[in-house]
Length: 98
Image 1 (cartoon, rainbow, N blue to C red):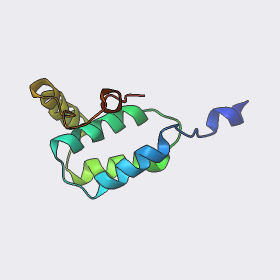
Image 2 (cartoon, helix red, strand yellow):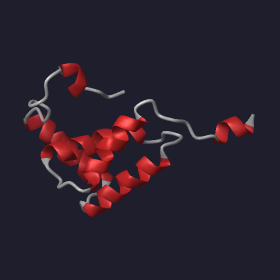
Image 3 (spheres, rainbow, N blue to C red):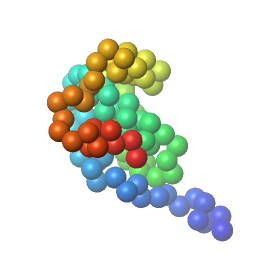
């Protein structure tokens, strides 16, 4: 039973998120990229797996010189001021919090 508890899980959106995180690794901290980073941090916070994604998210935070508190404060301000995802087509795609 303890083996099951320690086994990492595969996130169902891993492949799509891997592509996004790869882009963020070489991108500038634009409004959209900050929002995407915050969304990924929330998605993988405490997730028992995807350790490589979590490590890369930490690396992006370090590269952009942000703490998690600063990231979330900036993105709260962004979302309060405007819709960060307005240039995207389908609303269901832009609000993917799964």
